[in-house]
Length: 158
Image 1 (cartoon, one colour):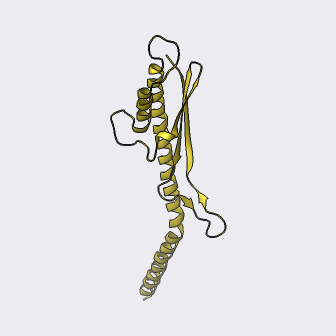
Image 2 (cartoon, helix red, strand yellow; image 1 turned 60 degrees about the vertical axis):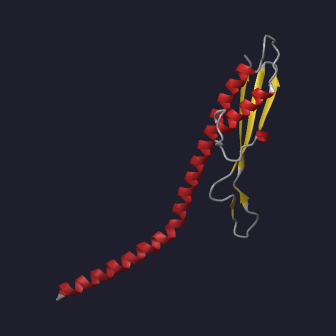
Image 3 (spheres, one colour; image 1 turned 180 degrees about the horizontal axis):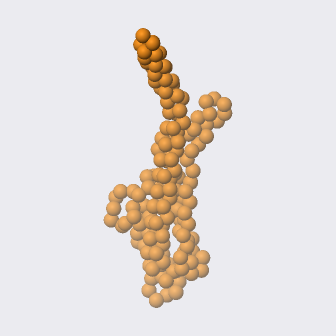
């Protein structure tokens, strides 16, 4: 008889524990999801910054080889070369139509000539996927999560 009483009290204890685990999971889940989504956004940020730097480096190499046309020692960047460099930065290659980074425009790319050196600067406005702002639940202004990724590369014209 004592066995039946202890078995029924054990079953009641196990049922209470199952309910407690569900409550604990409900309390921890929002923090766990926040951590997962923040890690995914940071990984995406690093991937896009790396892609921006790689294409900027490749475009700078192309520009440094084609910046001095002819036998003159004067840097003169032709419009066709400028178009090709911008295409290399935006698409990763000259004959593509798929943007490497969404919303990257020609206006985000600038060239500076200083003596024999050419500097290309790209300012890319990075936007998170999940939300553009972080709400403060009415305690103030919402926090904007987008910011510019600025990449600069300088090479000597050959």
